[in-house]
Image 1 (cartoon, rainbow, N blue to C red):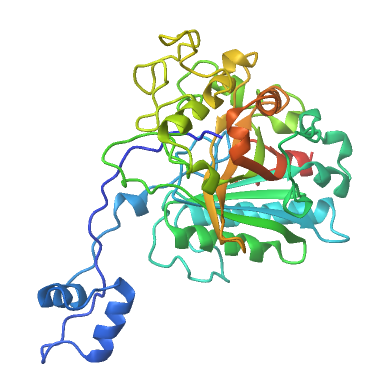
Image 2 (image 1 turned 90 degrees about the vertical axis):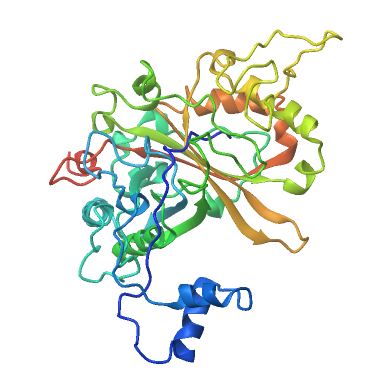
Length: 429
């Protein structure tokens, strides 16, 4: 379940509050003081000066910090949200086309969605019916990504254009899948470094669907915010493990070959696209947290503190799979998650993992409904996700602490050029 490294750390500057001038009278009215305290979470009674400072209006609005100004491009060779750095907030949502909707309606919908995505990713309102939820915010690294599920092609009469790589995933012994939260005709991934910006995009996409499609399922996730650590580092998951050390890197010579469909690949409309496997993986945190740190490290095969392999070195030091301790036991256990998922242990199979963590409350047994919204990208899932998951199915030490609860596979076409919409080559070809 590993994910990828966070983008470079940013140190946001302080932002300001109200822009009106301070009244020249006896201070601040009770109404304004209470309103400010409610908005900022002021703890009264600690320091009168602190309360006055927090409640006092500023003289001028400060510019957006780097967190707000960072922008991803919608138009390009590949769709956004694949190689971009992890964002602090994410939404995954699947749609089914409405009864009677077909290829024509799907094309009109993708055109609307692409237009809205281009506007929102530039930090602009989504259109005339914009909700103003993200008013005053910058782009905040917003990305919106679109994909097609297996069922989409029959619904639109495009069965002959359905890629072989989109054949349904095989069943795995660790699956406990909820069909109502799996698959779908259309899939949308939204990510941003501001929660309101992400929600604004989600609402705009849902409204744009109109009568053409209805939501099948929707999931919310999060990651550590950029700038929350003292230095750039690989992300941690809800088990506390550094997660994503061996993710493919864009500067590697075979990165595109592993992640993207080639220019002359099949089918032609998938050129420069990728395939996304989406899994809701619940972590059984109460069981996991009963283990000692050493036992947790044996399950993963890496140190919890810094992500280094148990065989020694730093996070990026190559794992020594043959190293033994004084008793002759393998230092990295034979069923350790990090050992099993290595590409060289799976015929070179690799995928780009770009997930979000989730927490959907506490269930009736008092157990957290939390884990990983696993999203991985590859040029062909039959050569990426499937062989690795089969290997994990046969003896991963982590399997007793996780549960796969939903699943989806989606064909994500290449990026749209200026004036085009995502999927145009498929829907108008």
